[in-house]
Image (cartoon, rainbow, N blue to C red):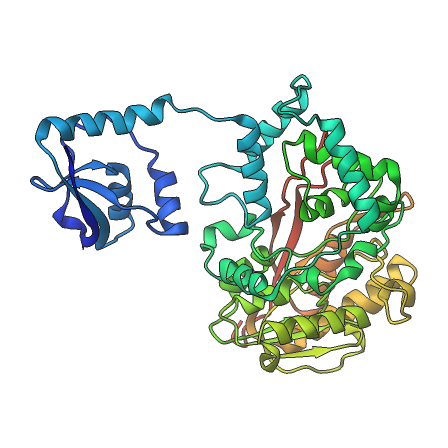
Length: 462
């Protein structure tokens, strides 16, 4: 009989790898897990020898990361039993498998709740599983078939109405905490805190995009609502408000106005904003970058946006997250702002000309400047000039913008941004690719990447 002890924190150098252990470990994944989650369970060591008999890979990964201590449970067993524990611990993992349907569901939920880094799975793994589900023959599992589930969900939502995003305050705080604690290498793919701004910006779901219907309009269409519910079920997911909101944004013929992912914003803030620095955002929008600011080391945020709804939503967001005293929100067009306080960093995602029409207020740039050239000369250029004048020497501006096609006309917004920025005095450092989360559903997937133009203001000595 094995005698168990309690877990204790010990010096890592006091433990020994089990001699002759045949197991080869996924070292990179174990390091990623420890970096992302910390040590969530103790390793096991033989008390008499201090040989690790379960968790040798975790011990090696912790040493690679420079840990000085590790949690361990010592067990009192003889050498023969220790050897068998090493073998069964490895072999039980070898023989284990997955319920692919449940695995898909878990991975989809993880992707929607912070991203896949730290799970051991990649976006491509999930894509492959979803593709397999799409090509697999239809089958019914359990006492309730898919058709009955979909019809029940349809009746429920028809009686209830559109599932507007809502999140209790404690969950909003926890999501921001999760974002703040996400390792830098995982931020570009993270969806942590992605849903937080939607609590304050319901207008995102009614923002029109030329040639598309909004999620609310898709919901009101019986055919599209049933299609969205079917896609969720076919992807192996559970029909929830969050899943339906996501799916209504890409079901055939519909499109949800883009929300800048807080994880991407925090990625750039960590790279380019100094500790306690001021972050300038000349198109504050739906609040994704403001949420990232709440999770960042930046000291102040200056956000500019002409939309009244966006301004009111961001003001409420700042109040609830307790950061209202660290920011300045201006409810006016960026091209009308003549001067703002000095900034250490700028990150924004301006309107893509008339692609997304955030409101019908006359202050909107697509209404003020109805042609692409007018928009470029009277909105884009002054906005970049405002950034340049506000930024301190050597500071960086990141502009997320993409070329668009409207009514068969192509607008080269990326090139316009780069040439306008250069004409003001910026140096174009590079244009990076911002990965977009892969959206499930039988080929109905949005673009998987967007450009981020990185600009730098010259130092005085340059």
